[in-house]
Length: 44
Image (cartoon, rainbow, N blue to C red; front, side, top):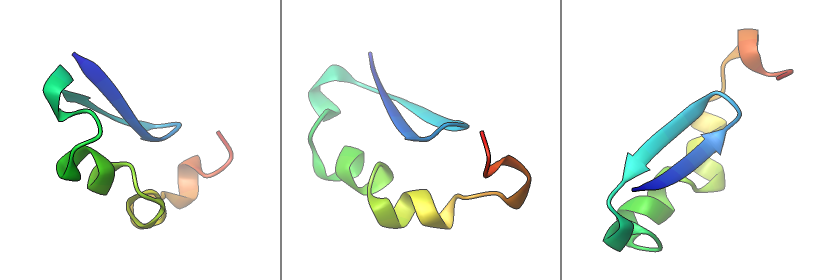
């Protein structure tokens, strides 16, 4: 199991083989982090 953190309050569990793959990269990209930002949790 590989954990992929988008930011301090969102995490995804991926298969070990997925680490570094396109799905993993897409879910941990800067764009994904910005889109999943929450105003209530921005100062975590």
